[in-house]
Image (cartoon, rainbow, N blue to C red):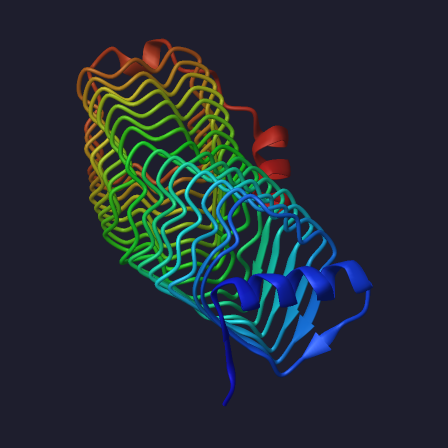
Length: 356
């Protein structure tokens, strides 16, 4: 194996770039290429060790079946660059700019990309281990089918980022902005998602057992066929949030805002909804057996077809609430509660039962 080092490596890379033709099976190490332009460089089956690409222009480059070890891409321009089957180990990309950077089928281990700007970047089938994305901009980025092990998303901007079908349990999302982010089919059990911006986030078929959402913004978020048993949803803003066929047994929603939200065919067995603000919410076919709903507000809410067995509504407000066809065996209501509920409407209740 003949290694090109230092200035010799630098000159060879520039020569390949200027030729406009691809090259292959070369070995580069211990070279400082900082500040140089390698725009549209095409290279295959090459290895890079201890190369500094800091501040380089790597726009439109193509690296195929290559290998990077201890290389620095700090402040580099990686716009439209493609790394295909090109693993990266112990590298840095601090403050790198990588609009539409594509990392495909490439293992990424111990990469520091703090403050990197990577909108619409794609990490596809690229397992990531010990990657630091603190404060990175990953707006509309995609990481489908890319295993994540101890990835740090602290303070990251993840708007519309796709984190589909991934086990995220070892990752950190402290203070991340994940509005419109797709977490569908991912495993998030027991994670700390507290005080996050998760507005309009998607959680379809996600596993969220004992996950902590306390204090988070969940307006317009959508949970479908997901498991949230034991989840902490205290003090959350869940206006217009949807829970469709979800398991929230034993979950805590105390003091949260649930106005105009929907929880059709979801289960809240032994859940705590103390002080929940749920005006105009919809609970068709919901199971609230033994749920603690004390001092909650269900004004103009629709609970048609719900199971309220042994639920406790003491001190709750039920102004114009629909309770048609509910199971109220053992349910605790204030004596005056039914004076303010909406009168039964058999035709509407039958329609709901048949269509929800």
